[in-house]
Length: 354
Ligand code: ADP
Ligand code: MG
Image (cartoon, rainbow, N blue to C red; front, side, top):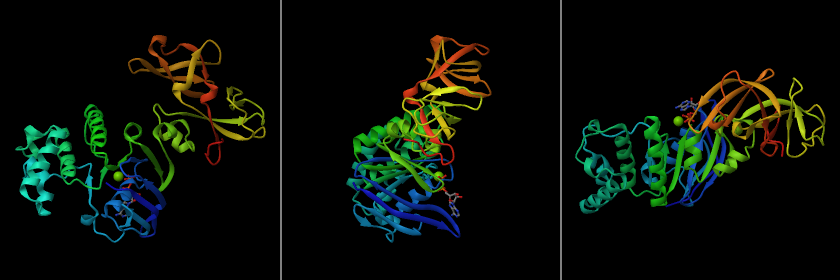
């Protein structure tokens, strides 16, 4: 088990800077999720930790030792990919034990480790099967088993659940979390899926355009996004981000273009007329008797809740209402943001206004 430290890590392909000065301290045993949109550099960063990609600048340390020049094989890390990369002609047990055989580990020890991993992952009955005789979820498990038997210092996962259907993805997500609780190993997990990030991580690292934009515990990032990008990326349905102006440093409202006013918990301190972005999550808007008048234009029931699009003046606002409200398209309603949940951002920079 080991800590992983990234200091000013950079990656350049030709003239293109893919990662800019990434610095991050990953603690021993921590579950870190790197999350961000496709192309933001997540896989590249993970592969640099793994030793599968050269490091253009900065340093990567594992367990306190700089590993920049250390080949992947000697880093004592196990990686699980989106494509499970199983050997098609080898049975499950052989897929799992192959790396150990290459490493010259005694047969008795190999059998012990494979059996233990198979038990942890519920693969005991499948050890004699070939990959093509397995379901997608079972193949994914074998790929994880292959990582577990190596008993590495840290596990690296690159979108390991992306090839599974939605239901299985949720199940395997829970299993990976249990695996972490059981093994207590350092895990670095890459995903573009904010729900996976929220549910798995001890800490989330949000990447955008090759830079770290925020690091924090899932709920911290959700409640206190540093900018409009993070606010929009984390949380579902997506937060409402509305163009507004300040009504003065002491005002506890902001105003939309059509004159609609939205509440703040504390004054913004901004001079009247400053352009701001008012952020409010759909879950933090009440349907009430007073407030902004609007029309329900879309209802998406999700079970206990309804996700609504409400047209207020010229804008559409997402609202999560309780199913018991039983709203329908065409209903005229009033909605009110909870002032203490409103997030204010600088309209130009997108940065949060404290
Ligand atoms: P993510 O995993 O977040 O989707 P990647 O790390 O795969 O993103 O890619 C980050 C960026 O680096 C992308 O813009 C991609 O096009 C670029 N990139 C990745 N690999 C190479 C390569 N071998 N040569 C040139 N550009 C690359
Ligand atoms: Mg990727």
